[in-house]
Image 1 (tube, rainbow, N blue to C red):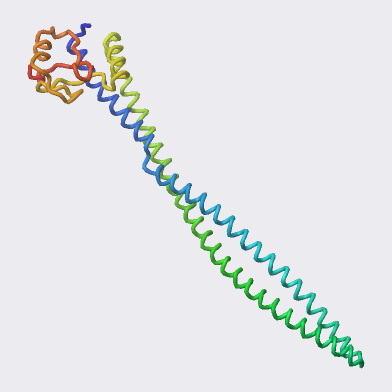
Image 2 (image 1 turned 180 degrees about the vertical axis):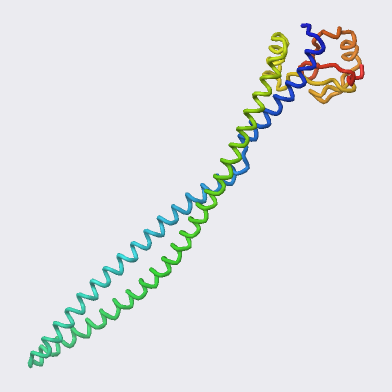
Length: 244
């Protein structure tokens, strides 16, 4: 393929514009907040699961207190009834039976009260744990909101820069002859680089110094010949800097 040297020189501007677009697209895909947000999402899910588990513990303990309190109420009512019967009877046999039952009820009530106290202490301990989990969950949510806001702001900035960069790239591409542009795009899509400067006998497409044989072939090419880098297979743009 042939193209005027001035047209080939435009490819360096196009490659620079494509590099800028690619860098901005990479920045858009790798926003720095995303990694931390992913960690926070895992932490948030763990905190929610722990909160649900501990809430279940608290509910069970509160239900247990309710059952113990109901048992205490039942025992207390029986104690009251037996005391009333004790006051009303004169039978020694009934008195002995009621006293034995009252003693048994007293022991039962004291045991229930000890159980209630122990469960109440456990409830307090669970509530402290639940408060800590809630605080941690709220801290995670706050950090998530702040990071998400910063990420969205940065994304919008990059999207604006990307819009400008793509527009500038299209303007440069529009000034290049279609055949040369098509070759450039084909090579760039296939190999990642479409065009590079040959600078002091080094291809900036591959960062490799060309061999004497390759340089001789390039020197023999006409100025409007489109030559390719033997290493990276991109278009080599020759200028006064090429060292030919």
